[in-house]
Image (tube, rainbow, N blue to C red; front, top):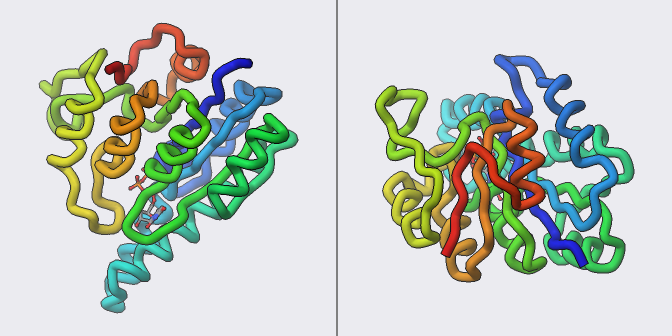
Length: 224
Ligand code: UTP
């Protein structure tokens, strides 16, 4: 049987400025259409950031800020589910796992618990399905520093799971909307189970397709 795949779809790809990037969602849906045993976990993006920043002005606590973020990821996930023909939306991980194992269809999820991110949900889903993990964001791999800020940041083409955890931990504040290209908890889950992981940009759909198939791409691969 073919290996299951779980995509952590960064919210950064769902928005273009303040608008919803319907064109990207359509093109993404086009490449995953008809796939079997595919999980897609969708992030909150700039919309989650806007809500969280606004709620901070009312001194909302971190737990409730996270709940607001989770609500936005659910809205984004339902939008992606609408675009991907035949896909089903799930709130609970065990239900998504059961569906993927029994029906081999496409399961779409958002966030689950405060203190986490959608990367963690995707890592858990990949772990439980023995799946390939594909992170799709607006960054084309893992860099030594944020490439949007540091022009001389170096891209890594291959990293070990422990190197990924180390990099992710350096950026882990556990505050709402503050993290690295992958959340440290998600990196640890991928590492503890040796999950094959790929980091590519959603702006390069050929890379996304190749990562889904476990083929060569221009992003970063995590290998033991
Ligand atoms: P994201 O998973 O999108 O965070 O969830 P992110 O990684 O910072 O952003 P992108 O979208 O991938 O670029 C948005 C926010 O929702 C809350 C957190 O506050 C997070 O920062 N959240 C999300 C949770 O608390 N738990 C979850 O399971 C998911």
